[in-house]
Length: 352
Image (cartoon, rainbow, N blue to C red; front, side, top):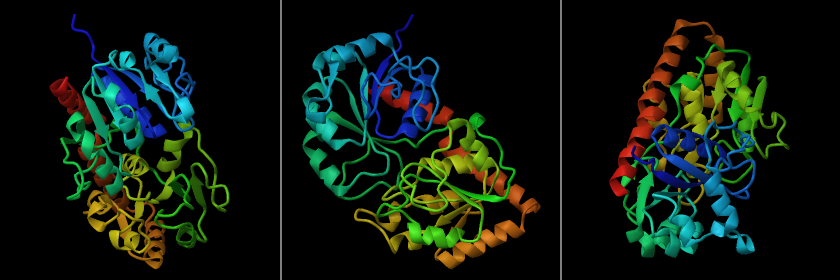
């Protein structure tokens, strides 16, 4: 019987870790995942006893006890708070996927280059990151998550593989009274809309803002348990999307798309008014994702409020059901985890 290939997966984002471990397992790989917590943490999907993290539940069958034991025996250490891999530990795997962390790649390149090394972007790369990685570029397979992540000074992409979610996980939107947003740290610089604009957009409406680090905002409801999150999107009046820093798109947007909720999102023009460094309009994929009837885009706070009023007035209108169908179809076309898993399998099989 053919041995299953083993992947070392390094995560920086709890929801993406959950999604990627599941789809890599569906692609036929054994995955040992480590994240920013201690390698033995019950939050780490590399631990067979993982109960899930703050935002997602457990993954049956994830984690291998022998890999965890090797990591704990010195394969993964954190001297001075910086994660280090031993060469022997890297040799346990057929390929390594590092999400985003430039310092992790550079600090471990001697060990990491013993195996095919995938540098996976997730929307937060900067020109400074890309320039720092140039000296080790021959050792990297660069996988970008959006075709819009391009720049003349950046490393060329060896593949573009989108985020993936399993369509069967998502209920169909049915509507309800509340506006809903999932966003961590809405007050941070570069979020769009800003906290002030968000409060103006949702003023006068029953609103739930869910996520980490929003405690000072009046509409904040804390972190919703994983079992409740999709119910909140299913039963929302509209999903008010808050964009994150320099990303092309984010995971919570595509979850709302899979449900088929009415999505109210900032246009590239709106984001440009408060954009952080390393952001430019061509990097923003949300207009493409929500175009042709799949969502509602606004240029101003007043536009956003008018769109929400229009959605509220149209409750029960057959057009809303048709739009939900289009939005769900768009999500399946672009982000179906079954197709994404096949792309990962083809890439990993090619380089290993």
